Image (cartoon, rainbow, N blue to C red):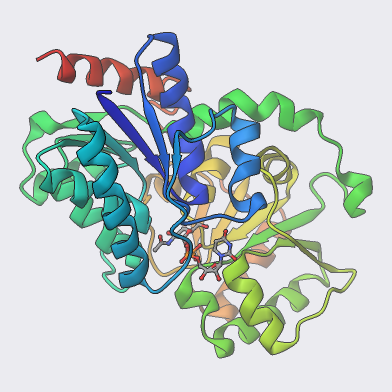
Amino acid sequence: MSIISVVGARPNFMKIAPIINSFKKNKIKNFLVHTGQHYDKNMSKIFFQELGLPNPDLFLGVGSGTHAKQTAKIMIEFERICIKLNPKLVIVAGDVNSTMACAITAKKLNISVAHVEAGLRSFDSKMPEEINRILTDHISDLLFTTEKSANINLINEGIVKEKIHFVGNCMIDSVKKHIKNAEKINFFDKYNIQKNKYCLVTLHRPSNVDFERNLIKYVEMLNLMSKKIKIVFPVHPRTKIVLKKIGVKKSHKVLLLNPLPYIEFLSLINNARLVLTDSGGIQEETTYLGVQCMTLRKNTERPITTEKGTNHLVGTNTKNIMKVFNNIIDGNDKKGTIPSNWDGHSGTRITEVIKHFLSR
Ligand code: UD1
């Protein structure tokens, strides 16, 4: 077995799926490991079914925990697999704890590491993802980037040019592949909403949702927004815990939902008047689909989505967020373009680089 690919948490699945599909076409054998960082059916299994991912060859079942506990558990389990299978390459994606834990484990066993979505930087070390990105990039042998700013970041950090490959965005490969199916879904009656007449909301960053005070502030803001447009809010498990504590209940103007399957969620983005989020991937999906996105953060590691795309970085001050929200509702949309190499062929490009790398 020469390649192990790793997935662990929800945003990994749509990034790895196009690579595995391309491996299949090229008859490249791959061993798929799921760390089990995300384990609920609607945070994991549904995505495998919808994305056409094969069942994982191995499920490590590490589950939730503090950063140290979760990372340590993944490393212990993944080391066992690496020793047993002795692969030539381990592929990790994104910036979750599973990404960093498996990259470090492999590299310490002298196994080469490929990082999909390398080089992104928020320059905010309070974000656990930023630490995961930096550590993973600095020990990777192949760094696959989604936008040119990532190449610049890596070069500035002293990573040699030869390791960096600007392949585009695997997440967009998945969007392109599944958008037709998403267009067929009719959820308008189910949720009593209309095309272009709702705002889709996702919030799960620890800095936004872990502190009751912050979340109360955002709930009040959503209630205010709901006077102008219906709010559809699929709630991440992390956010649900705090919403429960502060006693938020469903209302007909703010629709609280469980986490949604990939294709339904894609459809909800595609038909939304605007999206309010603190996610990384959704900033990219909205830019590709030309949907207005307000990113409720002070920074973004995906600057191309604000420079070329439809993303508005609105910060965390609710007065300022409401100003941008009202501006969009009044019809002042930002025109966007699709960034280069976000064309549905990133998985193929990655496969070509890997083939060349393994044949050396
Ligand atoms: C993780 C990633 C984050 C990514 C997000 C996408 C890290 C450090 N963070 O954040 O970058 O944007 O996934 O969703 O890797 N839980 C469940 N069911 C699950 C998984 C989690 O109920 O299937 C709950 C548990 O209470 C858990 C909490 O969610 O403690 C947080 O899960 P965790 O994987 O630690 O981080 P996320 O917030 O999901």
